[in-house]
Length: 259
Image 1: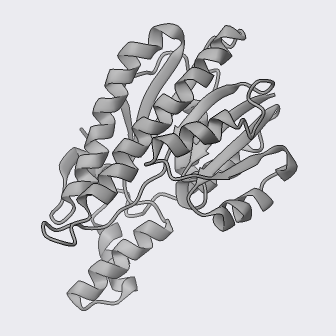
Image 2: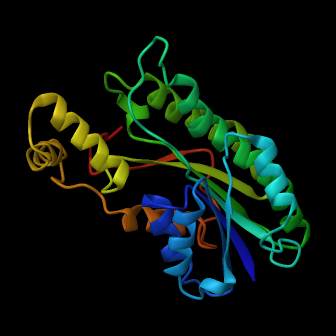
């Protein structure tokens, strides 16, 4: 049985990915997030929930993540780590001044992704030594890294940095069988997106439904993605059918950026 680690697993895209991948045979999940109660909720809705493990870990703190993996909660020695979904992240605006959220957002979104990759790397190497030829890392970026919007400099910088991180690690690690990629979702129907829409609605004096409709009208497809769609892309990237994609960012954004 093989192990897949997912950070930011307590909600949204991470939760949907856990639900989908838990259906795979011979796969156990190691779900990581800052809130144990949210992770337990996800765990309880998974198929064969007793086979999986959770850990309340702040990925921005590398020592905490390293110590958690060293405790081997998923018995990685017997169930080797084959894939990592570095999905943990926060959103929202930041403004220069005493209450600037720059460091908080960068620490979780970009440094957290880096910490996750580096802390998991020795375990992925061990999996290779056990005969698993191809292993995978996928990191969640954002379509806002492609074009940007006002008021979100920290968020956009963090998600753009992920694209560079993926290229750098792919060059270093792909020859050893560790493929590293990012995904760049657009609007996805998650709690984070709903909070953003509500915030914009409040600033503009509109209702949530009015703001939601305006957001969708700007998209070529006229709709947001469901978290399950993003999960399906991650599952493909983690499949044995995918052995050639590395060092790139895959866009899944309903046409908001067409490159």
